[in-house]
Image 1 (cartoon, rainbow, N blue to C red):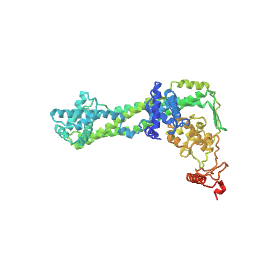
Image 2: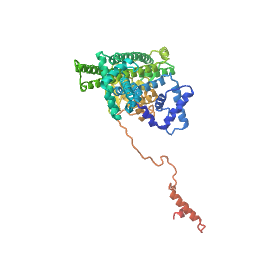
Image 3: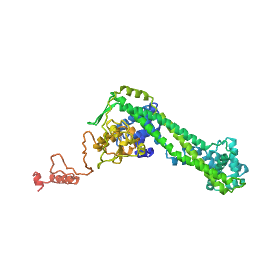
Image 4: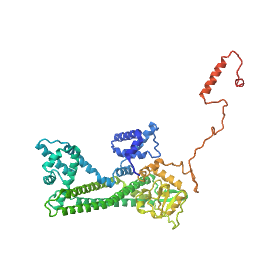
Length: 569
């Protein structure tokens, strides 16, 4: 699910904006200043909590109660619960569309903003004297150095080398013609000149004639890729180890009653179980997001290698074009210079992209680090009485699909790794109020109403399949009560639109092949027998007519009494 925070905030209108403002004020009163984006994101998810019934018609007390609930959760910034929201928000707000990112790197845009003023001066400047033309030439020079990231413009060596390259492209006469151009043509010419001079500098650096103070972009990108991959692998190993330790601990602490579909923990401290469950949710999501970073890095590896090959190939063709020649036509070499400049810029953007990945990796590690991890793990292990491991008989028979659900025996493992909902057992999740136990994809996947469910054992899958509508409702209800899982599982829109059954403990859903449909019926006027007044009418005009008639009769000369019987004669 693509979670677009700004659009969702706009859809919720002014009520939500006022709630966010009030939460920010309440937090500042207790000397805590969360980021506005985190408050908006977490509050938006809190609205889906069934205990927080906030609508446009909610009264002031209900809204204030919701604000107090949000403030209480947000200011507890060391709890795994709110850390999970911070983890999600940082990941979701980062742009990972590599193709679009490499074309508009955030850092590159920040750098180009610094030369916007200089660029505008160049295309708008009207030189009159010789000094004005010299000033225009210097502005063009510094614009080329900064926009192409050729080095430090304060370095005299860089300035001298780029000056020589620029003079080989732009003579004094060319400068005069440039000054006489219209603004649009000046812009196009300056953009083209940037590329050509950049290409000349790259060619000269490769030939060993100059450019010694320029960055070696291939070495820089290669080193950045190696360091980024290494940092992500270290983070992934650490996160996976923590998740494994927590899973081993919690799997040894419960027993399941299959007759009543209930789970019993050997740890008596319910608060400890809830804290441990929230920490496990945080660590699992941290591991999942780090895996996505590792996947992104592996995907861009081939693209970077292709740019390296293209870069070397263009340089080779350029060297062959100018080899042993005193003069070379510009039409022959300028396209190569422009192509080199484009590759140079793309490689810089990949470099910035990996810097952003490193920054996010460090931020996620910082958020996922909980001070009480070791303490909670030790308490849970100490209070856990090892339960007898239930050994199920081997069951090689297949689950027979029905009209309600589909059973997929062989589900692609690579696809399953990208789907968070398939990472844990749906049956245990339902009966334990949100405990995440790893699933076994190799036993198969149950598909019901375009939603997939995985299980840790085939027996759990069979129980789930006997009453799939009941367990699906319980699954969605459990997700709704553990709001930190809603976005992670990609169920934000599903939870909002889902038609929850009233009380699954009291509703017995038939397991045979029946279908349901919504119909409209007309109820009786009065289902409960009651007294119906014979002369009752709802028409105001009829009542008015009767009043006028009674008034006319009361003014008659006769004194005889008008009864109902005589009145209707």
